[in-house]
Structures are given as C-alpha cells and as structure tokens.
Image (tube, rainbow, N blue to C red; front, side):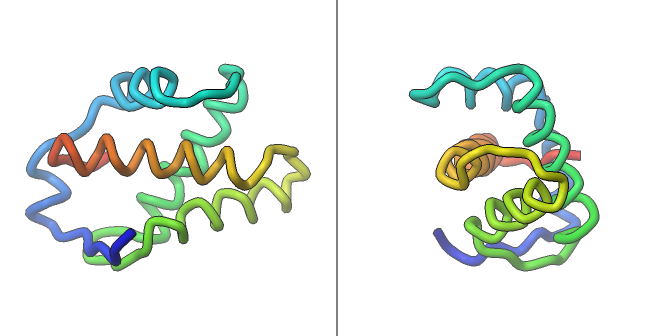
Length: 103
C-alpha cells in the first residue's frame, strides 16, 4: 500500500464508528477470531493510530501491522503476523473507503 498522511482536515472530516469497523473485519476474514483477540488488536491499532501516527503523521499500511505484532511479542500474546496484517489492512480499507478516521 501507499504512504498516507493524516491531516487535521481528514482526521475530523468523518469519524468512523468502531462497531462498524469490527463488523466489516469479521465479515471479511476467512479465519476464526475471538472477541478477546479482536479487543487486543483493536486496542493496539487505536493506540498506534492515536499516539504514534497522530495528526500529520505519515505511514505505510504494513507499519501498523508490524507495530501491533511487536507489541504482542512484548506482551507474549500469540497470534500469527499474517492474521494481524489481514485485520489491520481491513481496518484501514474500511477507514479509507468511508472517508474518515478512528478517534
């Protein structure tokens, strides 16, 4: 994926409902995902989005997956990188397609 920049105008143009993001992810994955793992991934994604990328931050889509995976390794949470990458990319796809950003 491409390098994206988060700007003030984009960030506040249209907030995204995290429940709708979750529904989109669960409808588009082809593997089981527990609520507990969803919560862990969603929390890590939000933390990275809000605190590491921030307004005006540029990022490549795979950077978020890598950051989530590294955080899980630190916490000794076992999940395949490929699954994190699929989920993070679905979250970003939903956000991009709906013209908004998670708060």
